[in-house]
Image (cartoon, rainbow, N blue to C red; front, side, top):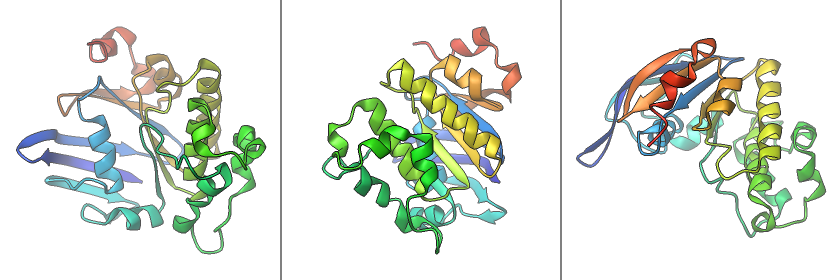
Length: 231
């Protein structure tokens, strides 16, 4: 569904990505790994349209979206859960979830029951402000908001960052359920090796903006990857 073909990305004179290529398929989790500052978030921002690429091509469902605006990619089924969650702290949980409705398909502009089934805590806290939630609860809210869009590609940027272990397990369970449902591709950026190994159907490791290792999830060898994750 998603094909990223040899993209470059620059911030002024600084090059953040160098000929990065990857695919993300329906019913599978594609994991991007690497230490801080190697270009992982830049790659995701390029895919969702928040940062223009300076070379290469991005295809989504057979269409060239390389120059397409971010809001059009969202309406085309691409949902982004950014690093740091970026929920609206002064809005309630219910209001935060409703912000995802604008990009949902016509006839589906409501919060689906599935969001509350996947994250029961959200249903219990609908009237609470987003800023009053714990970090783990905010992460669940951010993923729930993305699912309101009925995405066919779910892009997750380090969903375990700063999250307590019990909620990491909840998020892992949800990603497994979404993968098994078989109607979306999942692109996951992650530094937590055990989490990535448990979920990845395929993986790509970035170093200085380039893919330096890749393969199937069952080929993910801890010793080989950790040297690219440790500082």
